[in-house]
Length: 198
Image (cartoon, rainbow, N blue to C red):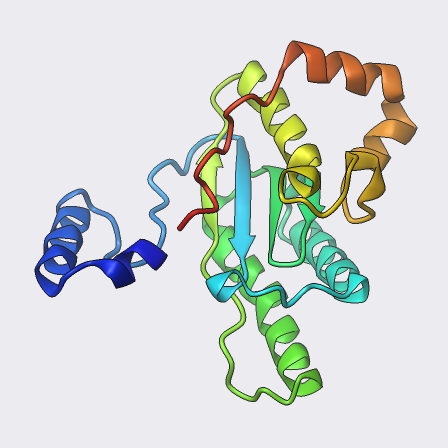
């Protein structure tokens, strides 16, 4: 999104034509793989502005996500809610339901925050993106990536220091040794490099 603004009009036209030729929408993230059981879903605040700086906002978004995803028959397996974006690892039975679910979470949050911040009409969210999980290794590396995300972005020193993360659920249900072993067996390395540079 941000690179697009730096392009010349000719480059923009060329990029849009290329996206359309590949069957992608002109400006929003494509969703080419819609038939897998597991996905990494990412939603970002528009222009990466930290609308969720307050912990109470992050918690409200997390609560709303669980409520809407359960209603939609989608299971959240891992999560990390940060000040300007969040990641979910989900088990999906109906991919087409995702758009409506995100609207049910993002719409009310946007209205509430714009009221609180006296910023009527402000755009709060960008569209969601997805990555289909391809293997067991990809699944567990994604789990580690999500738990490490608050550290990656410099919000905390340890994944255990971030409250709105499923690392605490895994710690309680599987233990620290299990999490350490997962980290050793499925290291993050360059996973996700450049994803937040758009």
